[in-house]
Amino acid sequence: MRIVYYKDEVGNFGDDLNELIWPRLLPQDVRDAPDTVMVGIGSLLDQARFRDIDTNNKRVFVMGSGAAYGALPQGHEHWTYHAVRGALTAELIGRPQSAVTDGAILLAKLTDLVPQSAQRNEILFMPHHRTCVNSRWPEAAANAGLTFVDPQWAPDRILAAYGRAKLVVTEAMHGAIVADTLRIPWIPVMISPEVSIFKWRDWASSLDLDYHPVALPPTARLEAFRYDRIKRLTEASGRTVANPDGAALDDAALIADFRQRFREEPQVIDAVAAPSGLKALLKAAATRFDGRRMAQASEKLREVAAGRSYLSNDTLFQDRLGGMERAVERLIADVRAG
Image 1 (cartoon, helix red, strand yellow):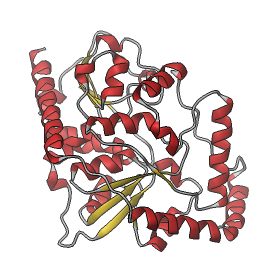
Image 2 (cartoon, rainbow, N blue to C red; image 1 turned 30 degrees about the vertical axis):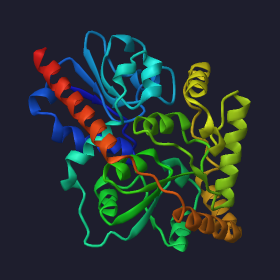
Image 3 (tube, rainbow, N blue to C red; image 1 turned 180 degrees about the vertical axis):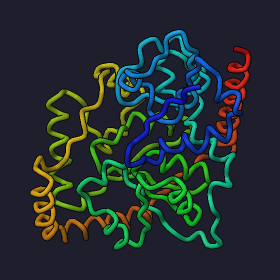
Image 4 (cartoon, rainbow, N blue to C red; image 1 turned 90 degrees about the vertical axis):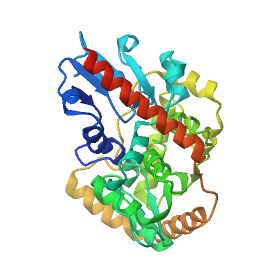
């Protein structure tokens, strides 16, 4: 079996969960099955993700994946959808009955992966992995009294931090999903315009949760410059720029927006297009003027951490977890049946 997921060279927490969860939950004979493809955790229902993946004459099973960043894969109509992330993805693929929740909820069955601390008194802050570019969020978080967690760290290091946490403030969606799965309250924030409202709302709706992220200001001049550039280029392309107000769009508007653009996300735009040596000098010079931005970001982060938090209803959570467990059982039965 080929398990499809995104593998970032520098790591990304949500995607890396595939390497922890599936080897533990899928028997060896299932993972060894030939001519079989499983689409795992992540925003993977995207034609770009399958350019180099052969699905012809193979059985393809979808397990808690979602849409977000581009047109649906060609031929996906013939795949078996045991579970998708939420109702928005289910509407796009025309399989409303397939809406369960994100596959990362299965971490609830693998609690031995999360070291438990005697004191759970830390407030974690996890930005989106692209927000780390040209930013100073580790310093801002420390100044606000929060524990910075980089989504590019190894999963075991991140899960160890969750074992000490009483609250998670997160821009990364899987930062919230794992917090909710471990029954830790969480607060959504938005910093970068690259955040996907569609995927957040897709997952949140699966647990009957709202998604109203709090906007945080950038920590650095180069960070602000990068976001402004992304916004300008995105608006010039006719696409919607992510912002907290956009979270108020209803499901029909999000579906319509997805179908209208129905193409891949633009490339990640770095702040300064310059040779690496010059770029380092520019960054070093620019950081001298970041003091006020840092102070504002820290103060806002401190304020957010004292605000409204989220946690799904226990009964509904157990229902969705049961739905994903049944999806795993169906996958195993289908693969073994040939």
